[in-house]
Length: 285
Image (cartoon, rainbow, N blue to C red; front, side, top):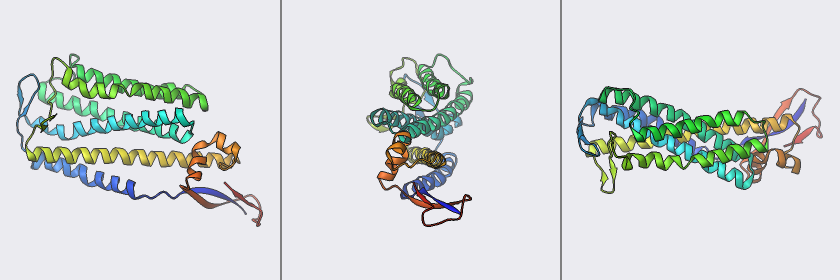
């Protein structure tokens, strides 16, 4: 039996555990507070008008989901920039994961927004809503990222092209957020101003809890998917017989090499059915 020394992730799991706990507790709590504690109160609409209807309750989920999508897209762009700077495959993976999670949350934004629009304004979609169109452009831009990425062969060129695409799209994130404030005709309520939250204390507490919970869920999802993909990257290196500690391994798997260099991985013995194990049958990855 031959043994192979495979890397095992040893980074502290405290942060992912905290994020998972916040999401697990915060999301149900937000829903409960929204329906049973926060009042169905008026929210002033920019440009005049007031919204009182019960459909406003979806606001406590819809807006935090949008913030989570913005965070994920920003993470994807930031790691794309780091990949271009350092040429590290691990950053390419993190960039991909950020955009992937961002598109998931972006889909939820469009779904919850359509439900809210139907209940509040009697229409599923309003093509005249400029801030909505900006978000749709942002969503479609990053959704097209996957078509571009998987049209290229795996390698350095795909990493560079994907990273450039991810970085260029991030300019749409602040535009989408600011569009609510600069559009001439608005149907979305503006609740975050220089004077603070424009809502009652009960509504504000529920809203903040919703934001924290949804951002925590976003962070946990990105961490979980990144961990899975980095493990797959390490396993691929081992199957190819590459040693990430060597120069050859560093060139083909810089993400693994850098994790090893930062002591974020430690050896894990994996038995393989090859030949009887001896003192010289151990391969150190």
